[in-house]
Image (cartoon, rainbow, N blue to C red):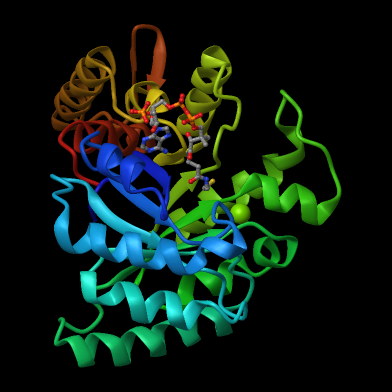
Length: 288
Ligand code: COA
Ligand code: MG
C-alpha cells in the first residue's frame, strides 16, 4: 500500500489552491466536494476538480476526491463528473453502514467499466465520523476490497455525540483507539483527524506525535504549513532507525545462541519487540 502520512485537503472549487497543493509533495491530495464547499458551489467544484485531474501534474502525490456522502443525493453526480479524470482514490465521508460502501462499489464498478479502467483500481478511503460509524467499524472495514484506509473525523463525531473538543482530546480517545485497532485487525491504514487551529504549531506537533504513538499511519492536513510537522511525526527518526537495527541484530545473535529473551540497555527484549523494530525499518523505507 502507498504511504499516506500527509493527506492534504483542498477546496475543490479553488483552482489556485489545488495548483499549490499539487506542488507540495503531500502523500495524498484530496480535492473536497463535500463540507468545505458551499451549496451554491457544488457544480463549480466538480468542474474545477475534474479539470485539475485532467490537466495538472501532482508529482508523486496520490490524487483523491472527497465526494458527498452516499445518501446525500449528490454522490452520483460527484462520481460521474470526476471519474473521467481518473482519480487514484475517493474519500467517502460519513460512512456509517456497510451498505453505503457497497453502493459506492457498485457505482465505481460501472464507471470503471465504462471508462475502461482496470477493475477495482480506484481506491476508497473511508472517513468515519459519526457515532453509528464508530459502532459499525468492524463491518465497514471488511465490506469492500477497494478500501485502503479508515480515516477519523473528530468534528462531525463531536457534533453527533454532543460533547466538546478539548486540548486533552479524551472526548475522541475511544473513537481514535477503535479506528487504529480495527484498521490493524483488517490490514488497513488509520489516518487521524484534522487539527483546525492553524496558529497553534505546538498543539499540532503534540497531536501528531500522539497519533503516531497510538498507531495512526498519517494525518489529514488543511494547510501547507501543517505538512512538514505531520510528515516528520509519521516518519521514523534516524535514532529510531538505528535503535531498531541494533535491537534486531542483538535479537538475532541471542536467538542463534538459544536465548529468546535478553536485556538491551537494561530493558527486556523478546519476539514481540522485534515486530515493532521491523515496522520502523519498513516505514523508514516508505513501505507500509
Ligand atoms: N492547499 C493548498 N494551498 C493552500 C491551502 C490548502 N489546503 N490552504 C491555504 N493554501 C494557500 C493559500 O492559497 C495561500 O496561498 P496564496 O497566498 O498564494 O493564495 C497560502 O497557502 C497561505 O494561506 P493562508 O492565507 O494562510 O490561508 P487562507 O486564509 O487562504 O485559507 C483555509 C485558510 C482554512 C480556508 C485554507 O487553508 C483551506 O481552504 N484549507 C482546506 C480546507 C478544507 O478543505 N476543509 C475541508 C476538509 S476538513
Ligand atoms: Mg466531516
